[in-house]
Length: 598
Image 1 (cartoon, helix red, strand yellow):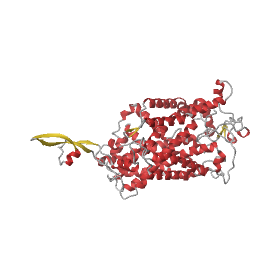
Image 2 (cartoon, rainbow, N blue to C red; image 1 turned 60 degrees about the horizontal axis):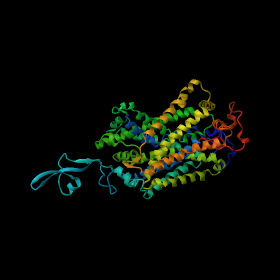
Image 3 (cartoon, rainbow, N blue to C red; image 1 turned 60 degrees about the vertical axis):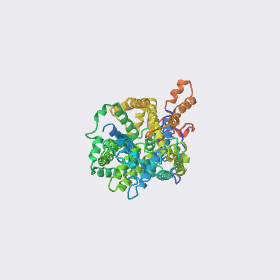
Image 4 (cartoon, one colour; image 1 turned 90 degrees about the horizontal axis):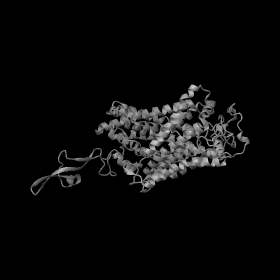
């Protein structure tokens, strides 16, 4: 199919070969594909995939969802990845800031301080109460503001107090110190300089890890992918020894879980979307990383390993998180439901608050935020690799000679674009991009990718291509996959998409709704990402020959030069394919992590 993206070991257009040399330092002598290079070791690839799939969502989104519920597509992918990498590194910058702020004898958010206001309190605040007064010799009971009561030296009548929840020190520190948050998206404010420096540092780390492509990032992930498990294990052991830990775990999946919620459709919607986003499906990164494998790599076993590791990590992280949240609820005299948070509130308010109550709080805080840093980095590595791989497909000779400046240039541009996210209104921008691009956009891309591969290119043809790499399988082996690809997955994704449209509501951050122009901007970002799909389809139809039906059929067929990248892998099935080296370079390469074979 002309517009269908494909793994790098399949090839659809001519590409000038550049032999491995001193200029081509990211290609090894033993690499099967000397034009693009391969992973040095299988473990480099697997850890990169696991690191990409296992990200911040496993720690701050999955545990909360568990509690609250009872216990031309290539262009779209790349554009979505660009938007997401802009704000994702801002979250990494938050983690860096909190990690640096933890290098003190006492965590700065442990107690209310000069930066807090009168609402800062770990216990409910009395706002009004009844007092007894004498007016013209007659005793009266009136309700007054607590400030007035204190100023006039009155005493509240027992049991008459009216309370409002106080704001935790960690919450006020997050809003007033870390973010310097403005009143809304309309009030941009100034760039928060220390967040900007942390953002710059985050991009420098990413650039340093990727300047040699997979040859350098494949080594970095040995630490960034494995270290979080060490920290989670340490936090779980520490949390399990705390008083009240069982209370938190009980709320997580134990006796206090509300299993009747399994009857609610919303629970299954949340479960589907969580696993969908957690595995990073349709972002382009999984295909970009896989494109550097050797042709005979067993992608089937890789997929099983990555999926199982990702899911088990989410469950494991939930135990580590909720054991400490249970302790926090215990010492504050609250229910776990009153202290649990999701997203930013879990990572930067609830959990820091719990850590501040532990003996040796700074040590645990440093450990926790360093874990968030490593979780975010390896996911970011794959997203940037998607972008640089796209550039490599479009300009192979330039990329081979100038990988370092191009990679660093991408990081610089994305850093500059991300500066709006470290202004005083930055958190509103981060949430806006996350809500639209990482939600709606990627769901649309996934549906169209599935339709393109299974229903247009052909699911059976796709299976035959896969068998060329992993070996022939019996029909019963593919029975479940055919059911998923042809029926179950398309129906589920379309149902989730329609449901999301029906349930759409104006996004907000906290209690602050987004302005009309902010919501419109969010929809414009989605349209900008997906508009290229019909545009490229129209261009290809116009370029095709014949009447409209002939053109449509022509565009939905594989190109004459479609087939394995290397001749040694073509076999009987692709023995008659047109040799790309002998025909003019007229094909338009797909823009994605997986590319039209050149």
